[in-house]
Image (cartoon, rainbow, N blue to C red; front, side, top):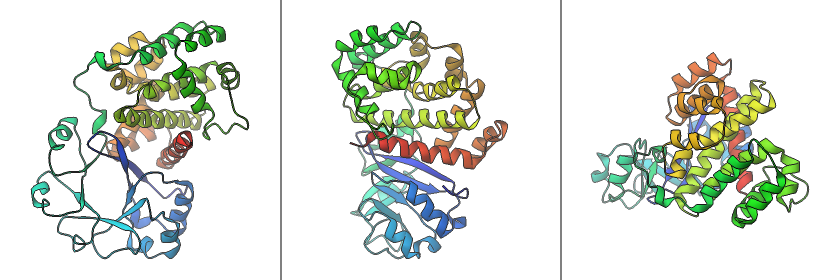
Length: 363
């Protein structure tokens, strides 16, 4: 990836809290050259509908338009149209009569847009309360990380398989036994299937298929296997919302792992970075405050303090990722400088984590 591209990937959520697609926000779009953007696109595999606003310079480059997937990329533009692409625009734009999507900048614009037939997206949704109140309105999609907010929990929604994963983790984390893990997983075959699907995905780049948990452990090692065991909690049911949380947790975990490597931390701390990322929203999936969950999970105080108090290197990195999700780039930059990292380091970690996750999801 070119060092000059600073971008945010913002989820666009439907009324069922499923990820419909993404908005790629190019923070420095006017400064991006055609060559740099082409390099970026070569690495950025688009799987879901993706909304992007390009500078006039990039839009007028035939090579870029040829490279973009016309089935999945929606161009955000306020004037003119881009042949063969769906377009998104804003209220009062000259493009409104031909737009496929209408982006609303505020709640106040909802009433003004009632007669417009385009699919409506409300941008910058900040709270779960706003989302819940607006689901009944004439809005189809909602942009933002508001789904990470949680005020009320219901432990009755937690499936037994999730509790089983925590029990397996706690029982073997300090006394690792392959025989014990295999015995526990025999009682929960769905967990074994999901783990093996993970490990055989393109994200691992293995040359031959792994057919058993024992084989997987021998290849991954104890710590990495246990990290993946915990991550599988997010896929212990089929609810759309849980898939959304899985994606967020996985990308956070991978970014923290990659940034830990960039800081030349030892292997144990790199693995801890991944664990901090996936546990950072564990309360949402387990329907409990994360402090209570972390007291029940057999992880060390360094991990707990990173998640609950943002202490240590991993705590600071986690805070930087949260600021990035909130588009608070000045605060992101302050933390990066403190850790002697650059915005380019963060962007590269984000891009590589997205690529890794797409490979993880590849059938």
